[in-house]
Image 1 (cartoon, rainbow, N blue to C red):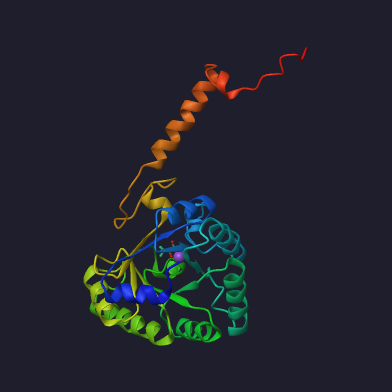
Image 2: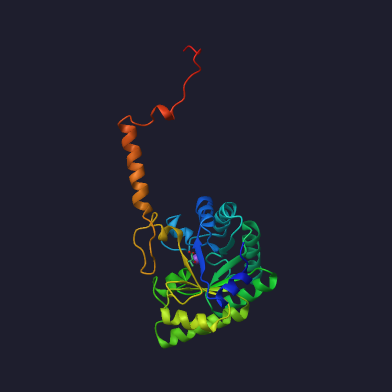
Length: 272
Ligand code: KIV
Ligand code: NA
């Protein structure tokens, strides 16, 4: 398993860090087998696996449930687990209690929190101080979708670009071990990446980030329909799976399944 120190060295060597989300045993197992550098148990599970419109319905118990399955599938990969909506905007005691459960029960290497506001900076400091490595996430932060007014690119104008640069510096200062940059102009992704000593992991943030992350179901085109501009699909599982299920249905209807090789026989001396 790579460590956060190796990710730091990879940044320094300009060796790109690869990250993918996973939500269950098979997705984790295949990602580890393909040699991914890090796995994110994203709260995107709410959208791509559980069918919600956003990530705000995802609970701490959901994240623990999926995080445990991912750990079983990828015992030798650096795993980051998302703290879900409103579980780190409560009192610092409750935030620590939530983080402790999520970190311990999933056996994760780090937790991720969204945002760069003062209160989130304080959370990053507190968790780090307590011994929980934190990955930050700024730019388009999906847990704020209802405040941002949709899934919109962030940091396009002077004021907001400068704000995001400040937030990036602040999360590093607070102790974050890496920072996800989501949905920002590529020029801004480069400036932030150059200014930070911790690795940046981009999603819709351009080629200059120290690493890239994609959602498992997006890159496989698996159960998803409309995809954002920043996604590249590497397979078409929608088509593959639909075709397979259709073929199965046809086989059953036409009595071509089960065939001889799929069936069991009695012992020769058994009489019915
Ligand atoms: O939940 C998620 O999948 C994420 C990535 C998009 C970074 O947070
Ligand atoms: Na997330």
